[in-house]
Length: 488
Image (cartoon, helix red, strand yellow):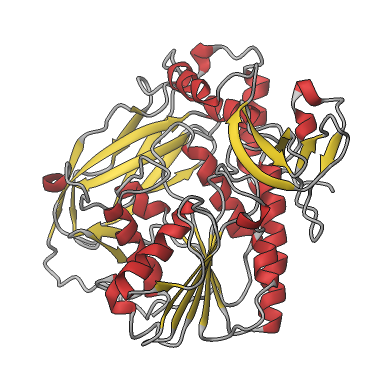
């Protein structure tokens, strides 16, 4: 099956990468964007409540020469000064607009009167992104492989494309791809020559391959990633205006495909304040009445399972059937008899970096097709990305297109069903751009679908960054309140 090129979702970035390749064919490191010469310049240091903060980033290389193309990836912190070191700091996300000529505009709505501090990080230069693109240029996870135990007792190496490994380029393979929509999964053929059933899969380092973690460290050093640029640390004062500032009146949070808005909220007083809908949920326990007689499906990785388990712990949901904690992605069904609340958890298909047999990792498209009863009292929440972001993005695109087809089939059967895709988070590493790339792709693939919503957590985790794939409990709860507001 042919795979879609990810660059069609990023035409300007694709042109910038082409410009870089033409202007710097030998990859002269002196031409790389440098945090030491790149600077942010603010227009004013004092504002009134209700104004829009504005600033400009001027990108320069290591020789202090202005860059002529864009594509650099910046992260901005706009924190209330008093709470700068707090676990959940007060802050307003900024929007960066790339003009593709070496300059970048910064804006932020000033929705609270306070003293703020601006800090700008060069997460990855365009030159660094070029290497990130090259690193995910194959249909495999560089440096790692999946080891499958077969029913015959033999062990084999598996991956999305086993022939992408040099040592297996000409080896025979067994095709374990999903027969419903050709999700690719191949293993080396065992010595017996028999492609017997897979009983268990584990994740392991590929012999004779460079570990991927050293790549991240080399990226930091070579491209000066995650570095503060000049002009950061400036204080901005936002004062009360003489006229009473009246924030816009917002409607209830409902599941509906809508135009992507940034920023979509801000952190204040330890909770997320939406700028797109009236999010009023104060605790997870407050969902008990609104989820009465409802069914909620959670499909995806361990971060989606965290929401499922948080709901279970707060609403006293009990396991139905076997519960194996030894394999976290085993199917889970939970139920509250008094309120008739049912939740289901199902993992996503391979690649999935946890032990378990095929029954523990169903494809989301298959799980959606397997739903026999749904409607206005059914919510579906899903996510995929963390286990695929180091593969060539064509794999992710193919997976999401298959899920989109299954979503449309489900909505054709049960048009009132509400479906939420939970976006990825700022990960505070040089590889953060991978998650950004996937969020942009998903928004495009699922555009114009009724009763579907892309729930964007990028702005929230800009203010409260997530330094691990699994967020700490306080951040999971903050995000869960945003998510569950759409269920109520």
